[in-house]
Amino acid sequence: MPTDTSHDLDDPQGEYTRRREEGTREVQRLESQDARLSAIRGVVFLVGMTLLWLCIRETISGWWVVIAAVLFSVAVIAHSRVITGLRLARRRVAHYQVGLDRMSGRWIGNGPAGERYRDPEHVYTDDLDIFGQGSLFQLVCSARTRLGEDELAEWFQQAADRETILLRQQAVQELRGDLDLHEQLALLDAHVHDELDQKALLEWVGFPSRPLRLAVRLFAVLITISTMTLFACWWFLGTMASPLLISLIAQTIFLAIYHRLIISVLTGVDEAGQGLAILEQVLDVMEDRRFTSPLLNEIVSRLSVQGAPPSQTIGQLDTRINYLNNSLRNQFFAPLAVLLCLPLHLVHSIEEWRERVGQHIPQWCTAVAEFEALVSLSRYAFEHPSQPFPQLTDDQLIFRATELGHPLLPPGECVTNDVQLDGDTTLLLVSGSNMSGKSTLLRTIGTNLVLALAGGPVRAHELETSPFQLGTAMRISDSLQEGKSLFFAVLKRIKRVVDLADDERPLLFLLDEILQGTNSHDRRIGAEAVIRNLIDRGAIGLVTTHDLALTDIADSLPGAANVHFADQLKNGEMTFDYHLRQGVVEKSNAIELMRLVGLDI
Image (cartoon, rainbow, N blue to C red; front, side, top):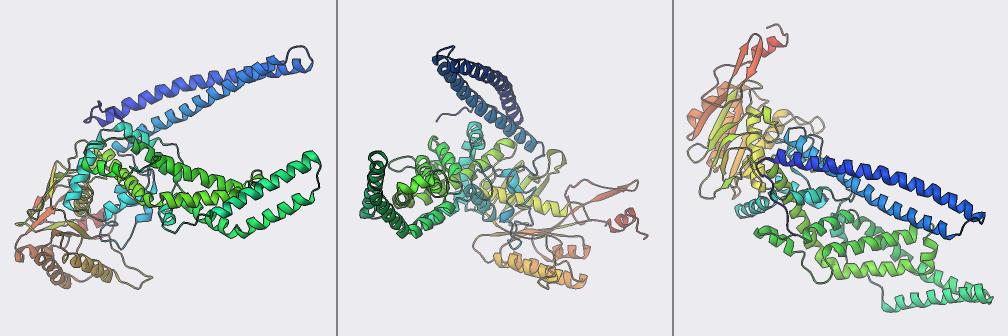
């Protein structure tokens, strides 16, 4: 399917504004049509009622009433189309307004927050605000299915290898400018909420199918024909009712025999049917697309099967599930459905679908998941045209960034810094006073690395990095329930980070206020031992501290360097510029901060 990519990739705000204004004009046009058609419907209805009254009084021919009814039906159909178009146009305007808000920094609370992926035990996600309100996931994710959300979350939790990252970068580059695709997915009409989990479909197709034997289905048809024939004879010909009652009793017993199977299938398929409508629509969008990047081509190739396209096949299952629910739970339709043995036929149809199609479902679902994760990263890439894709190298151990900024900070608040770690500089020991920017620097490095290793662009002028695994010890607290002190919790987290250094993939560690919770003497000895252990195992990273005694560690470790953040106190106000400087910080602001809050020092 050809797409319009003539828009300016370097001006996302202008492009979103243009499309929002187009949508606004469309809304105004459709609102005008809506008002006119509402008036027309009202007039035609009143005229029709008048003609009906005249027809009852035999003043005019009944054909006038028929003509009025036809005109009213035409008006209703036309009006419903306008209402549908108006709803879509309003959603289009809202879609681009949300995009503009995102680019201006007003995005917190919009989009899935990924709270269910939060794991305090994960080695970096909670420290770096990867999930939750105001998180990286909320900023990036545009998936319409749980499958896509799960896939993107997994990419943020587990770094890919270099080859996979490069393939994702190519795919994201290709999807980046396809705003029509972004809009098409965003405006899909199916209802989406957290309870709709397409993974239940994967579990359901994994169970053995139970289609009914041909003899059972033939008997169901024959007994239905028998009952209907006897009913017709009794109703129209006045035959005895006893044969009809015998047939009805036999049909009831027959259905009762299979009642447990019917309920079992209904229960299982109800869970599997969650979110099928949105899955069908996403598949439909994917089937119409043609790509050039290898990863996207491979993803779409998974949808190539004989017979109906995946979207239609999924739609068939959704339809059968709805029919089965109505045949058992709809008080108006259920009696007729039972009389026709429809529940039994529908159960067979659903089980036959599972037997025929089930083997393809996992590859369709993984295709949707990966596609939506790539689209999410591509939308982020389009909205941040100044952010480049990182260069990945396996030749040397390196993290070299120029003008590196935090991806979650608004444009006017983000201060950038240069950071370099390599074979010559394996450790940066960051000192500085409270609130000077030490923790933010660690989160800036970590969050950009998560983006880079997922296949997305980074907030920097340039970034060259090895495909690290990431380990952090930053946001740690004690646990009253588990009887753990703060220091014990810190030790457990640091131990996990140290253990990561034994894996084949190199480790980049980020340790904030290392070994907080113990005395200065033990902290100095322990911190040096931990850092030396990490460096000896081939890891590189940053350690922050406001304890100036720890800065001496850099003198005893080859490849270590001291850097710092500074502050200034002017006219009773503490100010920070958040720029990283070489060397050790020369002063602390703790006393000044105490005085500023009114403590008598």
